[in-house]
Length: 166
Length: 234
Image (cartoon, rainbow over all chains, first blue to last red; front, side, top):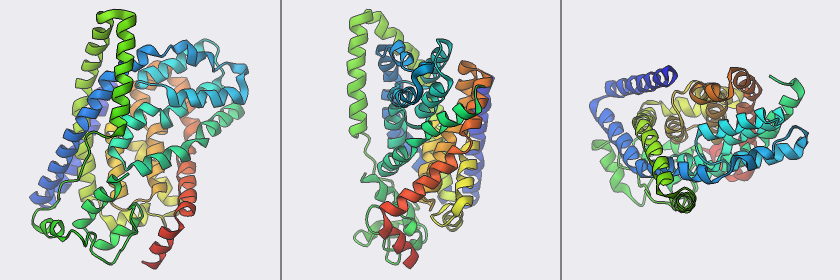
């Protein structure tokens, strides 16, 4: 778990760095942003709690075989399209998304299809969009970004088809 | 929906009014007037008391959807696995949650500090609608090096929008964070999917943030041509 520690250090280091810059602008600026950040935190915690604690249940009732069965190597562009839908519909956190990708690869899923799945999951997994992105960002931006992102799992799959396997 | 102009105005109150023209307001931007003519009191407070709190809705429709999904799923788990199954998942997710909590705080603070210290003029020049390919590249690079998870990326992206970045550059940043950022790759993707697949997938993803940002800008200008001409006029 040294990777997680490394990321935590980097994260808090950045907070400390920008906090220091804000402090040098004057204590009122520093205090105001501190309060703003704390208010954001307090407002976001109930939603995060609900999502993180609840996501285990959502993941537990979605049979993974259903998703991996869609991603066979012979499925072609239809399989890619299915993978995109599956990626968007995958509940839960990164463990579930990547595990399904791995299972799909190991059980003979096509590489472009799995790439499309992972990229689609990263771009617009519904749970992350609803749980994380909408609370923090203007909803109009979120929908716009998701709509604009739709072609890109297909682009990634096309590149994967061209350059071949890892 | 209604939150966008509110956060935006909140930030703008204490900065120079022309910055309101960055185009994320829902109402028509009026660059030369005070940001909130119908509500001048907060603007005055802004001098002495730097930042009036944002209006937030702790419970929105997205929360309700998630709550309903969770309730239905938990019931199904309970019918399938009994109380033990429900408790197993609960304890696992509670420990996950307690691990994430400090990082959420760090992300919120990071977003708040960044929106406070970033020079708005400079941000709207280098990440605004006129920033061209360079703006998209800067957004991409920023998303790629940003530490932390969604708890950092979204508050920071929101801060960028508020200080003058356009949709295109912000999309490049969010997409870059999600596709080529090292945070999730190091913590999750490499351990689960393996180094080869992960690096190869990141290689494939390299052009995508810039393309997504460019597409976003392309569509945005055509969806909201009026705002664009306002910006030209301003």
